[in-house]
Length: 254
Length: 211
Image (cartoon, rainbow over all chains, first blue to last red):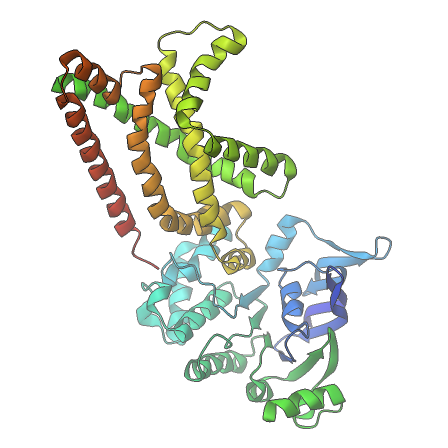
């Protein structure tokens, strides 16, 4: 079954065309890494998929339920109702590059506030689950700390827990280690590997090529707003076929 | 003398408190209008703020007080004086507070909105649960400035002879041909502001549990 289905997605900012006719499917339990140079559109792709940007044309659906559908007569995508979109947001979690934790909430409240106040889930059950998650990511003793009291790596682990609390069908990572130093980067990559071993469906936009090769089932290389090459990690990263991919990977090795 | 001054001080405190009660929420509403992308909201609020900041408060008090009579020939009742002062102070301070709110709201990183959006918070929840608490913490220093200025500005009510502390001090001073009432009033203003500054500092400390 496909958790995420994107068909013919195009997106422009003014006259700048950022994504050109992207189609993409992610099946349950699959781990997809998206790599590519800056400005290739990989972050915009992820922002369209998580409804932070609206797409101009094309369709987007989670588990068969449409976020937006292409309307051929209007030649643009038509989004579902606000209420429906709010429900569909529970299907996925997103981990930001800059964590974006709420500084005035404790670690526990950062994780539990949305499920309790927005999704109206049972308070005790949510807190219980949050404590389990904190234990898994090794922050059981930090539930009453505020974000400023944590290292970048710890903050990012909290934001991973926040993305997981509603048991989403899929988790997106937008360059989760780009704001971290090498040591903390490893800390986060280890956490993501742990999620990968649980077969949580993930799409990871990253610059960590080795990590992408190790953890992903499929690697997508994007450049200039299109998917240039995709396939098994070893094929794309070790034996790229497209010259654009070859240049990008060769430049990284220098 | 002191009793007269103290009764005036009560009026000054009333002006001060009522102005805050009206101007703080009104300022927030104006700042939201000012930040709106809709022209019919942001253009009038921008003009309003510009006029309120660009003309003397003393003049505004007189316009609010005498306007109904000169323009509409409505006879002035004596208790309208106090109401006029509250109206003039509230709209004037709301304009300043609006700009402080705006600076505070615009300083919150876009990522906070995006995180809230992805987590499913409605716009209203995002604003009141996520954004405003952080805004309040950030704007306390400039708001303290305004609040302290307000304590001193209450003396401008003497323009239309509202019997607050400054009006009374001036009357006593000329009746007694003495500096003492003015000096005593000065001390009262200073103590008033000292307490206000102390309370604002406590509030700032109370919000220091996060950064």
